[in-house]
Amino acid sequence: MTNKARLISGDTPTGKLHLGHWVGSLENRVLLQKEYECFFFVANVQGFTTRMEEPQIVYQNALEIVTDYLACGIDPEIATIFIQSEVPAMAELAHFFSMLVPLPRLMRNPTIKDEIRNKGLSDNYSIGFLMYPVTQIADILTFRAEVVPVGEDQEPHMELTREVARRFNQLYCGVNSHTEDADYIKAGGLFPIPQTKLGRTKRLVGTGAPTAEGQLLKMSKSLNNAIFLSDPPDVIRQKIMAMFTDPNRLRATDPGKVENNPLWIFHDTFNPDKVWIEEAKDKYRKGQIGDVDCKKRLIEILIELLKPMQERRKLFEKDKHAVLTILRDGTERANQAAEETLRLAKKAMSQAYFKRDLRLTEL
Ligand code: TRP
Image 1 (cartoon, rainbow, N blue to C red):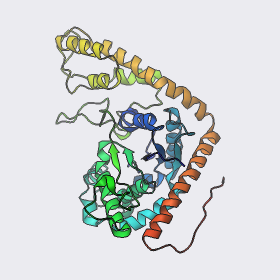
Image 2: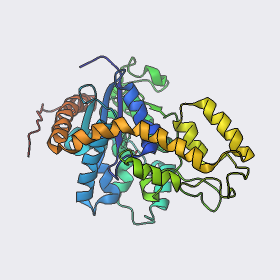
Image 3: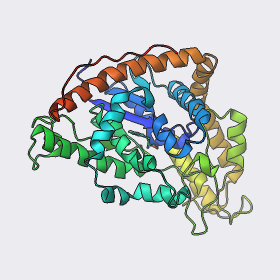
Image 4: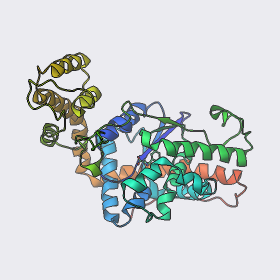
């Protein structure tokens, strides 16, 4: 137990993690793991909201994500890495919290609306799919986290989380509704009102062409425009060489457009040499430098960024047992924290009847 503030974040196991995850959240997690008491988890139950027909894939991806966490520098000695489905307090709290979320309020959630549209769910989405923002509230509140590093698309869920935390604290802990967010614990509340921590790049674009309306799409596995943290150098080379840039620039002597050009968005995001970028952009605009040269530079930078991650990844890839042991130890620690919150929440809701013990053992 520490007296550091808590931080939580998770990922749905939809595939390996990519550069968009890195700049959107992972990089922050690695940077903040000493400053906060950190919990990082694989949201495999949430994964079932859209992948209930592919359970083995969810399992494989879950272990991939744990491996990615370890590869990108999350230290399991410092941070707690765990799996959502083995922390029952999260599901139990989600059920209680669902009573505090009006259904029409949920249906106005723009991320839910987007996902129903983008994933073609039309009117076939399940009750479980609609529940996922509620389980996400429980993911966060179960750990009484103050900080949540996520991408900007998660902000509607964060707003709901804050609403439920305020409501619970007011209803069951006697906190006055005029209390400032920062003062809820001081006022006797159980749940801090959590803050979103956005990454330095809120929404990294992918390597592909824009939409018909000229809008660049975000990096996403399902859009086939992602560079994965585990991509070897030759794959990075090939993806960057094939990357969309300025479609009107046919040769290096044509003036190029820097704005809204993934090549330059990537340089701005990953190239630490700001002087080089400014000079090269200037030349690009004037048709004095080729796409290929700028791409080659970017390839070197990305290979360099990912190299230490891939070296660590190799160690863990060979040893699934080590990955599972780290996951079990973390899940054990997560359960201690989660059970404590659940006990306090039940007490606040006047539903304390018995005490219980929870322990994990190997299969
Ligand atoms: N929905 C998040 C995503 O797709 C993953 C997630 C689930 C999460 N529960 C969370 C993130 C709790 C932060 C906190 O990225």
